[in-house]
Length: 340
Image (tube, rainbow, N blue to C red; front, top):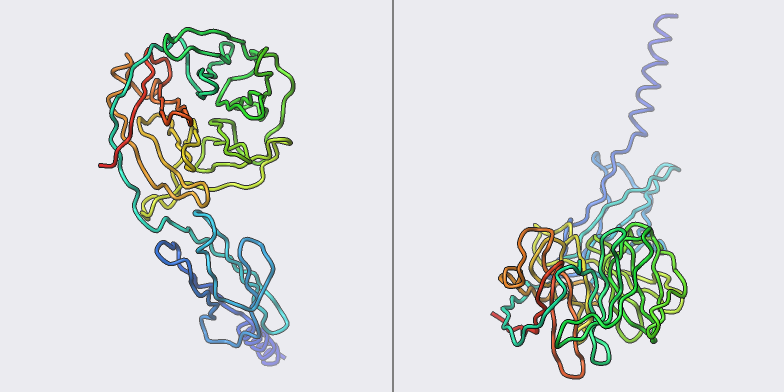
């Protein structure tokens, strides 16, 4: 009886060992120069695999294990493989980070003109529209939207934002002022002429509200991460996003804390929280194509430290003029960028 029990236990162990599969999905961790790769599923002990179905970012499953990410945005992409064997199946997933194909260009700045700026303005958003600057400021209980005379720095019109909100970036689209708030997951829409608040809109999957701009078709929003969101200007629904990356593996987590935004000549110019530089980002895939070092301006504007840094970019499309300022800066600068 004892011998029979030992035999039965041995059969169970043998059977268990026989059906145990050790599967591995093999893919590159990063992609840069080439967007193409081949995925492969292997079994450690060379056991037979019946079939494998692959997918990219949750899209339709296919037996094709050749992938082309050359037209996809930069950032994280999920490769999944459903493996079939011995009447069973198991899902494996890997994450691949697509990086930029080349390093960014670096820019220096030249000051063209200097203007006065309200040192009490904790600048969150800045835009040039019909000959005037429009600005949104932050701080809880002290957030505002403003219309400002460029040449004198005089505030021509100002409206306080409800004290429950911490004001963030703003942009003007279809004769409305669209304003973000920080943590409330709500945006505000104001009448351009009267500055009266007309309605609010809710955020979708974006984490918070930071920077705001637009192109001809979409509102464009940063949320304090590496992501930049594209919104339907009528519904304010988040349609898609890109993530900002360079070509370096050391930045494979992306460039976080993207802040104030401006759309300039088909590119997105972005401030980075607590940094005195501007990133020039390709809106199609998130490639950081340029880095503009604006160190030195903060001191000229009477500020220092990590809190009162560069934050505020405005572009005069008609006259091709670029303006920048910062949080509680007493100056606003017209600058020209040139490659180093």
